[in-house]
Length: 370
Ligand SMILES: [Zn+2]
Image (cartoon, rainbow, N blue to C red; front, side, top):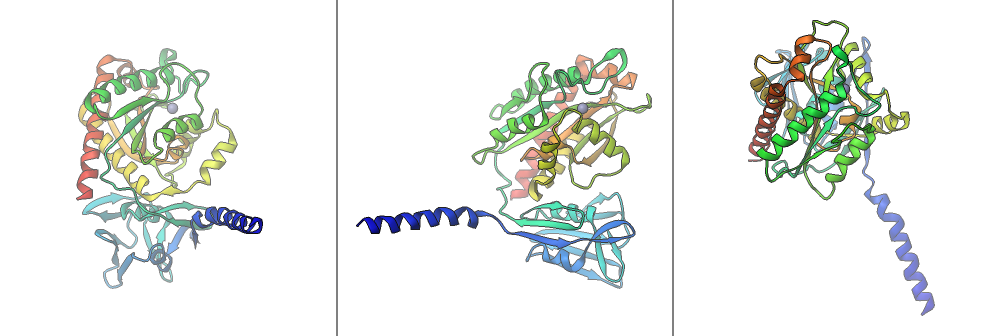
């Protein structure tokens, strides 16, 4: 009898050992190639990203299409734009080149993963694209919560503007106004602030606050509020950012350093950069950024001018396991912007603009589901 118990025990022990191993998802690794100092993925490898990807290239016309289910992307060789769901999208550089075969730029590959909403998570390293296949969340899922993150705080003042205006104070008053507006406009959705007073919070803590709410299949979005600064006092306007691994240029890198790293532990940043990004969350972040930008452009008409929707690798966005955007609400180093940012009228218009954007974002998700 004792022997029987012992063998049942060892079987249970073996099962315990095997289960976590089986749960580890397989990582697929695709080699990237360097052509003229830029990174590309070959057409053959693009096809292998998922068994249901269909790539058709027309040699005579120098163009082609990539399909996944109902979604289609159209591209032309040597062009810095492509078409997705009949909308034209801009790229920083040429998306597809011919060089002894067909090659897709790293930037375009990231767009493809998101636009086709491939059921995968991914990460680019210097030489590889790493893919893990996984199921998607039901995109028609109702919104449970919104996290509003007031940038900086406490010993971290953020950017400084005229008359010693500190970014941390402006982001807090904007975040509070936004919370009031969203609570009124979305009564069924819980709205949280990462900080409600002037205190220091690490980026890691901000993401933890958001991800804790995200547990148990709850669906939420994350909105980080910041103000920009630059050496030229003439530069003004607002921008909305979403997360991408492929950041745009030198200026972008400087902004990322400013927003990401000053008070952060390097171990946390390392952990973040080893994390895979989910293609569905990436696409929804991009959609949310576009709608927030449109909502703000509409409500801030004549107050602060719209600049652009942009992509960047902000640590605070990378840490949030949900659709996330970062709004640079205006320039503290521009007198007009600063005056507006400190006014009650702007705060109201800002909150109304973001709320309008969230509303139309949710409508688009619901439509996509049908
Ligand atoms: Zn900031």
